[in-house]
Image 1 (cartoon, rainbow, N blue to C red):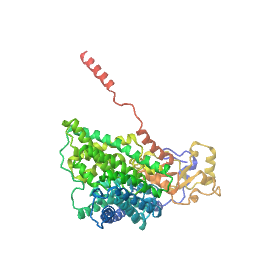
Image 2: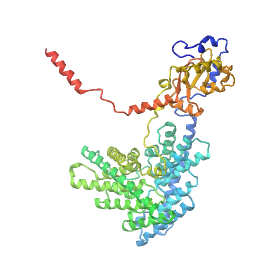
Image 3: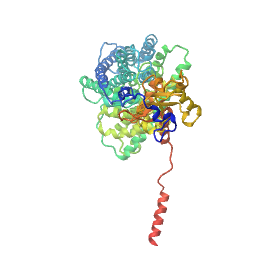
Length: 634
């Protein structure tokens, strides 16, 4: 037995006992180097391939967005104006009278039938369902959803459903990416990247918002920020935005008057407005799931009928306020342009909330981004008008209040606050709105985190027993090296020793013999393998040499390998300890890493979260200064 530092502790490990043994050639160990964990490249040829697929998804999503919007227009023209046309029209301009109540109900019946006999997965927002597939099904979305989701959403929205087109397009783009990942030979990580790329491309194609689409994919689907995943998603998003510009032009999606740089007092108001929107976002989320619980617990009919029942509220509200019907992108533009008085904006926001929450809770097919933006913009406009009436010298612009309300409402509900702020900027192209947006979305995010555990996106999947990531932290095991945690006082066995002597040493019961695993070295201290107590105990013959018991090449890590890679190496080979080797030629044993050593790395993170006593004491500094003055005087 020997240690890395100090003389041999017994005759069992004296180098003379290994004399005459064949020395393990360095080439045999070098052959094993390829099996040791190596530092992964940031990008490689596989990333290039996935990026090319991302570009194809961007092109496809751009086409899907155009077709989907035309399909919504077709259903809207047919349902509200009894004409065959693919031109975009607003259901608010209908002249159906009380019959308008019936139209959404018919749409709800169709969606219910499609959900029951097509796929139940078409029900809901779209994004939570994609998140669920990422977390529980290795990003495998059934191929039929690629067709059923946009069809059902087009029927729901085209018949007056108060939803945005972006949710279904995002879900369809994600389904396209997932299907592509299932057709080709890909890993679960690559399928997740393709799903996120398709989803981001769908949003970018709808709003010409490539940067916020990437941020949304990171915050809600990827749950990470790595070059291997972000690059394909960004390329897909940029391509889809290029398709949007080619077809729709480069202008702002939501046109608003130019705004001035905010004053400090106005900025403070926008931050407070963000807090208010955070509270409202929490209330809206709880309202959604409270109504959803009511549908599940109180209605004695099959869930297939629920969308039609929820559509009754859509029709009634739409009869009194037609602007709540359909996508309502024009409502957002009107709020951002201050085309509503405060009271009208307040009424629009509240009625849209009632209509949307009941309909969405019924399990129909539709998105959340546009309704939340409409509600937030309307209430933000009303708040800006009210504060100007009370405090006109504050410098608040009602258009900016509507802009902040729009982004902060969605940011508070989804917790994708960076995506929300950038989205509002990209869709309006107003640079002076960025600072108020950052202030409002950040405070909304803060309040939402304080008041609500899950978000409007994650509450649904949390109820199904999944725990979505809420924070994206750097892996602590990836930031530390094995040499920092490996045990240096290594007990090693000589390859030429026989089993009988090792068993006798075990029988002595010394502290060194209580280890579970022992590296086996040859005469040149080159690693031959690792043997455990069990291996020695089960040896068939006491005369067997240790080197003859080695059944497989040694598994080891280098001293500059990350603990994360070492832990993965342990898991891949189902072993509990790894020799740690130097980069010399041949590599030399410098330590051993066990499972408990890996846990020590986790404990470092826990220590970083413990509150420490102050290291700088102003009282001590003051006393030292006074003592110094007294000394100088004397």
